[in-house]
Length: 471
Image 1 (cartoon, rainbow, N blue to C red):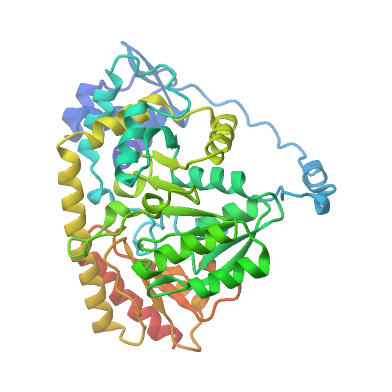
Image 2 (cartoon, rainbow, N blue to C red; image 1 turned 120 degrees about the horizontal axis):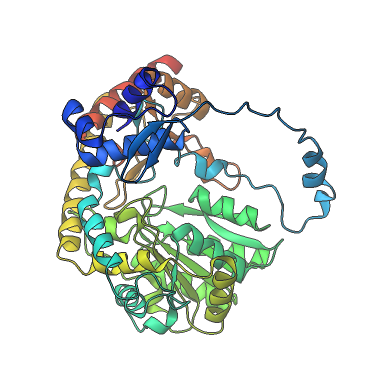
């Protein structure tokens, strides 16, 4: 589409303002592309103000653009945005540097070993398109949904959590990030401490700080968070919230060991605290993974756990459908905050989620994704062992989409990530994953964001070149 839009942009000078461009059929035949590609290319030019489309008549070159008015003086905003900011309970400025590490697409020609989502080739694009088409034809699909979410979708999420969790204890949210924001806002007042795993997901740290909370780190090892240090942190801080990822933790890939699960819940309950369980990649277990433990929420009759589960990682960055599950009075608080913030998740998206997870294509996609992720993990670990044995890989995960590497002493993350970008790959530095001073330098490498195992091998070879540059 981009190539066609660029070609048409270069040819616009052939037409006078108001002149008609060739028909869509003529463009299809000339460039040997689909009608959809032609339509999207013309839409791009229309968005740029270069073309005007008229239904039934065709596309025409737009008239001359009006002169751009001189820029106004916005310097007054510096005072308005910062006056009395020192007394703000919740900061008005938001630091998004943590999530910006892995969200933006890299420059053209750069292999993306930093991505936070699977490559489009791993996404169920045809199944999602078919589900969205079917959803749009459902009776009432464009009406207002129940504020808590569609009952059938809430029931599906409840079954996935297991235990005694019911649909009545589930709220549908607009993606995991939104659900985490709602949970943090509901459970901790501004200025309060919140216990977090160390290292942990940078987007959650950004959310906590944006809400005026103080993240307090609790170290993680190969078996997940350490209960002894968790108990110490609750006693020392008086915190009432602990955020954790018990399954394939980001970034370490650790799974909370069976003997620690009940202990974590017991410690939180004794401290009068909630556990926010971010179960973000349960559907990204690898084909060779052992049987997965149940969510913490499935073994929690007392309402200690607020569970967050999402479809996004297994589908697409734009398929933002998630669930918040909780029991007791906190459920009404979560519901009220979500309604005030966003009213509800758009019904067509909820209907599409129901169509997708209820289709035969869904289990096929999960099996295919599981197998491919295992192949890619092995490809990356093999390439690292061959080309970069200097980097320590303390844990090889059986789920998720990345590896967590420790750098030798004396190598700085900033120098290596900059050299990697010059070599044509994007990698994720470890510093944003720590809420306090990190114990060592790290890198996170994604094996899911590139197109193939060939690109994984090439990316590691380029990383070797970057390594040689900084050593």
